[in-house]
Length: 373
Image 1 (cartoon, rainbow, N blue to C red):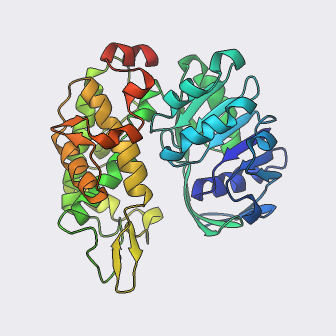
Image 2: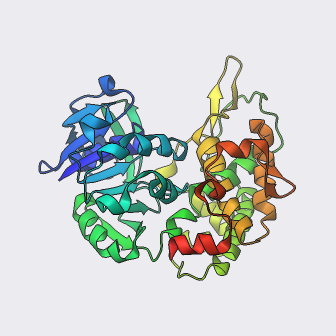
């Protein structure tokens, strides 16, 4: 199969290693830094055998990469997807599958806006979470994978196509594909857009943006009870929203259930002891005198500006109050020096830079539901 990968981060490296290790696949990479990639990508697997994935073509020119692809996977931050989708749109072939790993951040709305879906029978899918946990050790050459999932939950924009994409992806990734009921089970997933902001709020809420720390704390190993309590409250607000939407969204499990925990204490113990998360540091950057919050980290830009705020946008459509989510957004926008949320509504001047639903001509619950039914 001819597979196109768009991106250059941890997941892109991992996908090339995983999929390129099968000689029957041709791997084509669209990236901003084509000259920094080797012909092969090594996956150092902490849980099994290492892999070598071949990279057949690499370019920053979409016309050189995309037209021959049968399957295209975006492994990009949420804020980068629209520009890349617009870049590849003229070159996507008929009957191509296009997916995002993961897919929250209004990926499906961007595709609907910029891709000729009907004219070329382009099929859209996305995963609820990433297929593995990995970190680049040598850019364009080597990635360390600390955990490859046994299964991956996937949704399609057209629910009738879920069996087809599941059958396609399962042997490619050598894992069980769990079909989701509706694409909203990706869009409203309570993974990183809830998980990371809850922890950051508990960790940083009482300090200034330029305050210097002597060390950078671990993000998960030092996870505390307050982080869990905030996370649970935010998760409950999302599930209040889910109860208002008349679709089967049972594929979004309450986080206590997802992490097999009965309460905040057990959730704290669980999150602080996950082996794949060991050693992951908080979003801070090294300065001469110590560490300060990294406001350009994906934990802020992707998980808040293009994650949590988009969940808030949907909650507003359905008139759902989200006091804890609002609290975290107010804190984050003050740090970022942005005006998003005003008096509980996303009416700040900086909302123009976000992918809110009105920019996709969706401004009522009825228009929203019509898109996903």
